[in-house]
Length: 138
Image 1 (cartoon, helix red, strand yellow):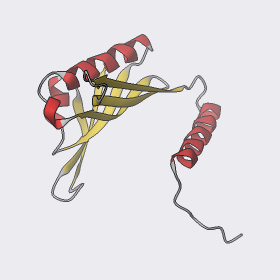
Image 2 (image 1 turned 90 degrees about the vertical axis):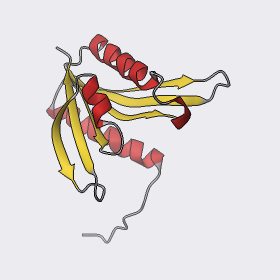
Image 3 (image 1 turned 135 degrees about the vertical axis):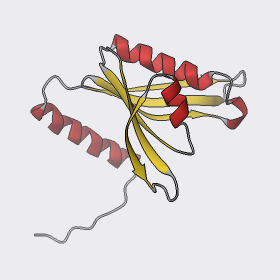
């Protein structure tokens, strides 16, 4: 075996690896799909004040990031982004949405909108919890 170096890579390399895995997955799980769904809310100065990054994979949507700028929290922007993502997921015939969050972020927020905790990792990061949640859409 050759001595190959392991290198840290940038976003272009990461996208290449992601697409190669999607290609592999579609051979073994036909009718697969991977489609990014990214949303944002901008203020009157065209600055992003909230955003949601997700992807539709096979029959689900996976929310990777939901963020609201500190100045704009508790004004309904997170709710609006989550509702729009759920609407899009339903239009794309997704049967569920999954996401993860930390104890210092928003587990109660997601539970308020019908997400159920399916797993918790303790002490991740230190002295906190890492929650995995799901919401059935059918």
